[in-house]
Image (tube, rainbow, N blue to C red; front, side, top):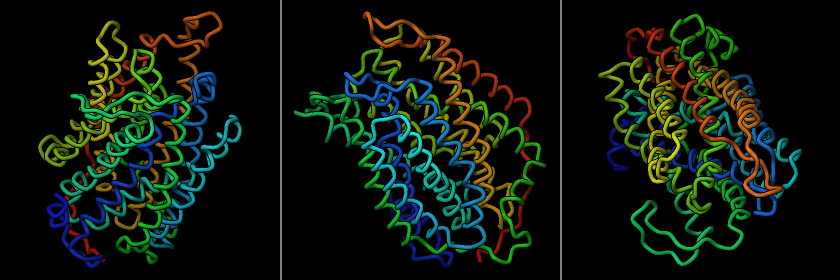
Length: 447
């Protein structure tokens, strides 16, 4: 498979014929990094200290996962989009940022108080968040047919997420492994203090980040365009808001991304509440990435046959359906776990399709910054709105603890139905108002 992807990406002066494989490894590491810790962070932070967690409130969780991500996204267009578009090669910017991110997240794992967690989470987001968009723009810079090539390279990021989500629980959270019919097909007894060991996922992420940063320094040279007509690339990129389709994409994205963020905040705790073991949370949520693998493989074909509008609508409908299933009482745990696969449809058909659309819409000299502007609005506004909404809904739908003195929980039926309604409104907005502004472009000089 790696050879097929390498052959798919012809050499454009940026490296040997194995360019496709090198970009695939980049994506693998890019998403293995969050994949090992993001799904279990909410469970660890919200779990009572007696269970091995930190006992944070939902409002504090929203700040750690929402405010931090927003500040990172706000810093990205000016600090990193500008640097990569005008001053330094993309691969060097990514390398430095990722090494710094690895050090920060490793230190964060040792903290137990909310204040240090918030400060370090913000610092981590500032240096890691821009690399997500930069990895996209670096890949796009070396592709001749992004609609077809990007999904096939990006799917390796999904594989990275799945691999770490399976390996970490098997190696660190369980003992006495044996074969089982459920993914990841090897399971055993949970180790003592399993909840407290979830934090070690952050230490593993720190090691991955440093290794990935060093690998970035070996990637194909992706130099800045210093002779561009507009010196401040991110300012020119904001001109995309003159395109009606871009405005619709941003507005609906500001509805989808908060509920996308809440998925990672609450699903781990929700699955634990309905009877799933802590050691099974990562593998269960990885079904979303397994679904994403299939969707990324067929995304190019879907875009060519259905167009951006209807692919985006399919992604939005998946958000609605997933939360509708989550909120429906009485469903077997297996059905709820299986519905995690809809996350792959959400990601591929809305987020990945949006990345590709923005790349088509932007001019060549601002593509790095165009991706960063997309991240600024969606990745910036989405998380902080998601953190605020998570805290607000947790207060509205709070229920008393099962035992006297136990911490309050959430009425997840009402909680998920609200998110389903938001997803439905955003999906209808895409169907009614999104119309592509992309015009046929002449082939560009790869230099």
